[in-house]
Image (tube, rainbow, N blue to C red; front, side, top):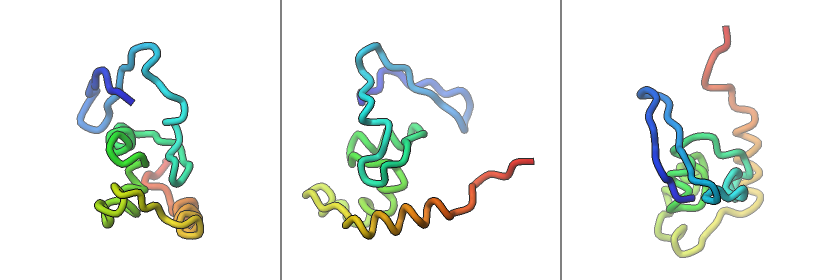
Length: 95
């Protein structure tokens, strides 16, 4: 995805403005974990590693050279990670 412009709303939130025709729906979901990519950092990492930030941190970062050469985690490793992610408590508290 080509980023046209990035606007910061404040230090914690930002949004990306795309020109018509620059959006590819296949980039809405991480090709590794198949979860929705929701943050700017997901798309930033996707440009180089073709995965979301969470998958980058878990799978790609420790094996950058292998990842660039085409290595990907096995299905059972991905499934285990997805189960862990689903069971993980949210990082926010609703009051």
